[in-house]
Length: 322
Image 1 (cartoon, rainbow, N blue to C red):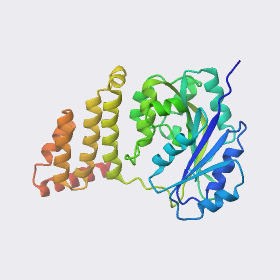
Image 2 (image 1 turned 30 degrees about the horizontal axis):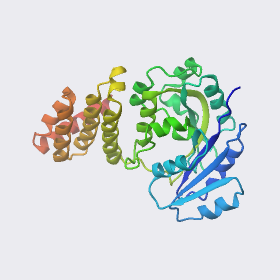
Image 3 (image 1 turned 90 degrees about the vertical axis):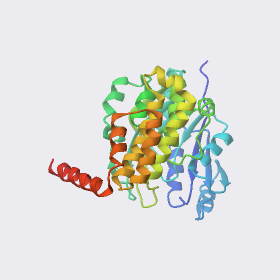
Image 4 (image 1 turned 120 degrees about the vertical axis):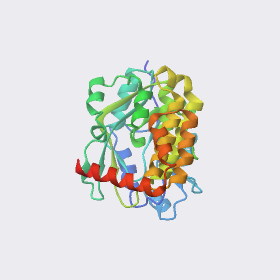
């Protein structure tokens, strides 16, 4: 007899009173209902608690001091009773057959620990502004060809581009717990780190259908470049510490991953004219693995600032002529 999976939907929320009713509504409208909806209020200062209370029964509401979305998701996982966990941010929505499609894949192949999918973007009036994130990454046709089969070398692909929007994920709770959940002190890229740790140990699938609508609005978190690049260094260091052997198995040099992350941060600092910072960062990169690009930029950082500025101006003019 086929085992019936139980599904817990986890919604982290912070000051999302204007949107959370739509998020909850999209979960309740699923063609395959979830077994529980857990809302984790991450220290909201608006009317989120009151709005959730008005949404009726069947919601498990938890409140905590502001600690970030990763801590809120982890709290939801800990409180969940389901053996499958699905995530949805409070300002986003699922498409109606999301859970049904994903569950069919997992029931067909019990070895699959995580099923993600495509995502569209909408504005405040629910108008679609982007029809396919996978298409933007030139991955839609790849996943169509796979036809719901596990992704070959998924770990290597994830490290090229994080193709998994968190709100599309349906995952085995045991696999998330085995991977340690979300790392709460990494603000940018914590999702990539978790998906990579899961993919290192288990089969994962990405469906070419849109499973989530991501709402674009003025309150979306801005991806600040330097904090993002610094956190990506921490992500790569964490993956090297946790899954080095699995990285090697997919032809990835863990030291190179860390070196490239440092190098990307150094290049951004160099491009911003912050030569002393860039010198220190390129030194960290070269300490992990010597690459020609990092070596050249590290040497350039030793040149007089006015010379470097002149070379950057020439490069920008040449780029503008293309």
